[in-house]
Amino acid sequence: MSSPAPVDARRIEVDPARIARWVAGFGERHGIPVWTAGEGTLTLTAPDGAQAVMEPWLPAGPCPDGDVEALPAWAEPPRAVGLVLVRRGGYAVGLAQGERLVAHKAGTRYVQSRTAAGGWSQQRYARRRGNQADALATAVADHALRLVLPGDPRALVVGGDRALVRDVLADPRLAPLAGLPRRELPDLPDPRLAVLEQALRRGRAVRVLVSDVS
Image 1: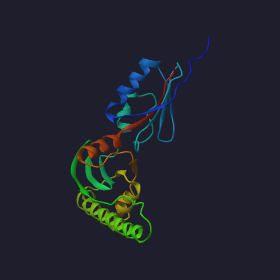
Image 2: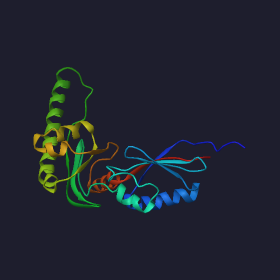
Image 3: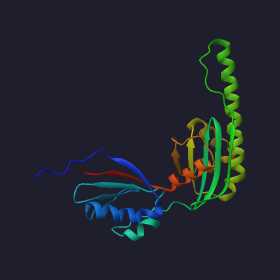
Image 4: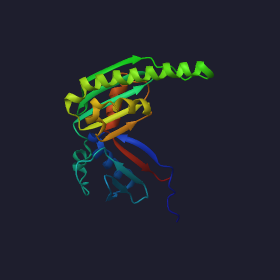
């Protein structure tokens, strides 16, 4: 009799508070798994060949060996987290304590799109676009300085345009933020308050790579 064939792996995100329930459900679906601790990860391998590799953000200490009830505490990220999201035309910054945003600011600011024009026109547009991007980065840094730094965050969630995020965090005033452990979410839509709340949920989540069997 042939072994079950593996299927393509899929990535999911699980709230740290729900990770024990998720692991219990994995065992119910696939049989009691073997636990294997890695460097900041936990791999579950079930008797039917299914596998789940869990990667919490900044796990708290060693992985609990077989103790499902200890998983939420292990997977819980730092309580104070800063958030900086930036895209052309929009930004959102915030400070979270646990699952709740305690300070936030979202807004819009125009940055011109690239142009296909050549010659002097291209140079003029490039200068204008560069000035607008610089002004956006400075404005976002101002908000982060006012709202995020005073909360003494222990980790940082960033998202949106990588170059703009880099420019914001290059501000010398934000040096304490630039050195924090970071989780990146480049696939977020234009920053708004709802997107900031989504970024907090995703930033705190346990990332799980699940390989089922067919």
